[in-house]
Length: 424
Image 1 (cartoon, rainbow, N blue to C red):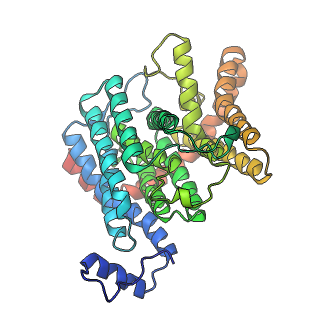
Image 2: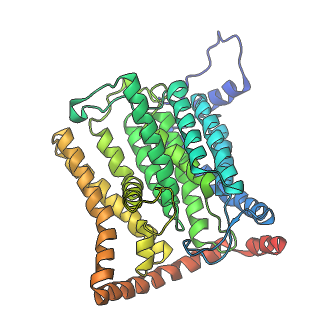
Image 3: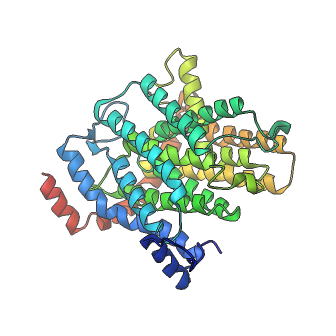
């Protein structure tokens, strides 16, 4: 039974929260219902809060403006992180009435710190050096105070547990990689949130299978948040909003704690972790990891800072080849799923852990680096083939965008028009 036991008659102090949880035990709320509530509650709350935040962002001028590098046509509000954090906090407080997740609240406090710095970056702009220091500080806080970290390679290269100093260095590296990877890939409508839905859903199932109930609840909460945000970010015209750095850092924070589970909350030391956990994480986050590594490497090879914005991301190449934002997002998410599916096939064969890890890396190179280099090569050498592919992509994108317009009209109903009038 995943839910807390009934309150004992010998309990000296009975809080209101204890009574509420005890009532829910009596009414036989199942663990499955907790998971559904975790996903559906934020999915319902997002549409209620998002219009108000859009209104505030536009009035305060917190918008992202078009430029030669960016792929938008009009200013868009960039306070998506604010909505995400509000919904997350409200949802977790309500869920805590049904199932005790108090132990996750310290991590939420750290996440709020990360969100505040992201909000400052959206508002006034922060140097990448300062953001790096903040990110290292947050990851260090999670490592030493929250037990989130890379404590073992689970048999990869024949290595199990790690010494503290090496564990800390790998944790900082993983934190910087994932936090900045999400920020790098958040360049078109729906891509970051779409990958967030995929990550949350897969990690939720994985956590359930290993008995990590609190982590599963958090994963499904992010599924609900990211799914609702995806719809408004991709399809809505009046409620359109970007995550901004505050939102991408919150999503990166979630991905980090999923990849580096808390040894206290999850009971990792008490459970047997899959020996393929490292390669599983790489496969699940392949779109984020491989795009960041390639982009940073190419920028360094050309003598530029890895943090200097350009149009070398995979989503830029797809858009330049005639794909709409929606088609590009679906394509990249699909490629990530292909890598994950191939990982699953190799993991089921029971092959050597190290061999399977390198196969996973190969899958990522083929499916997430391959399209970039292939399209770039066709564009430079075989213009007619590249042009034919672009025309085909435009045709497919046109059909997808018609479907998206229908969804957008549903989202932007009469209430949306009233909100828009108030904004003007």
